[in-house]
Image (cartoon, rainbow, N blue to C red; front, side):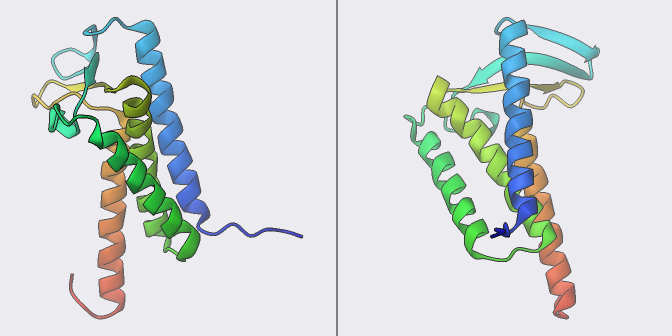
Length: 158
């Protein structure tokens, strides 16, 4: 008997986002000292090992640990969604990327009590972030595309 997996793109995007995030965080923690920075494009883009106890841009740094439960709740809700609903391709990739990012940062919070950040765009003085954050943003972008496509298909403007 062959089992047909629903929403393959969701599972692939979720696994890929989570795996790439965790591998990069593992490598930076193994080969960098906390606070160490290596310029890849001096003054523009550096790899910098910092930690963050809060959410994006250190928001909610004194959260008391509730962010790990938010990450877990979001992850569980997305898994249930993917198991129950037939998603469009854009939705599969979007929700999958959000799952990968939520799991990546959620695992950090559960295991270490803080998130490892490493991507440092200095040219625009942007806060240091990680690939889980990138995955979440890509996911939101995919969901916006899905919404516009659905709106156009139904003759509505979004």
